[in-house]
Image (cartoon, rainbow, N blue to C red; front, top):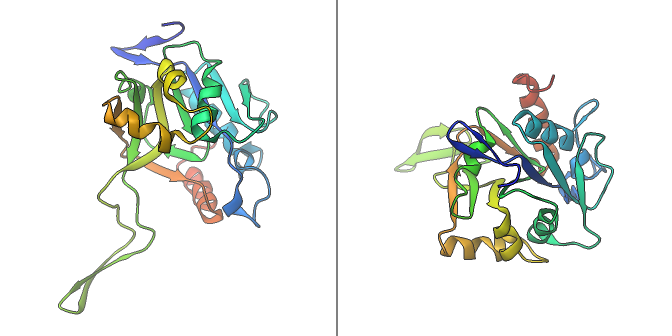
Length: 231
């Protein structure tokens, strides 16, 4: 199992891949830097926050998969795309540097707040892989009507289905053998693994925010400040 270690009765990975290939298209014209370099507070970028989050949870080796090799001064390794590979190709290329049986992977723009230990997801990857899933929140208030009369307003309720929260755990060999050289694993690999019952879902009940718009960036800044996550 290489450097994989045990925490209590569960398996914990010590290697992680952060997918850092975002272009920040929907953040323009407010933001001109690439998504990993979004500033959460003066002197702290999004990618640095995610690296520090992983290190706090015991990850010793972190690979940044993307188009740039100067995203951080923290201790990481890089897997550089010379052409667009998609999420599947980027993860497969980054996995070439991984030595353990299991690897944790995440999108740089999926921020998790609340009580969550990544080892919980790794422990669900025993069949091949596991995806962190969460209920999305409606971006609008819901209006309830009875016989043409408004009876209640529900502000931005959670929807009654699950979506991927952008955090994953896989057996490294599953990535190497099943992921495409080019293409998105969500479209090309996940359906196949799901049909073979190789993917587990692990429900996340904490606060999950994905940063795709300028408003979402402002929301994350405010939430992190309120919860004292920034030291």
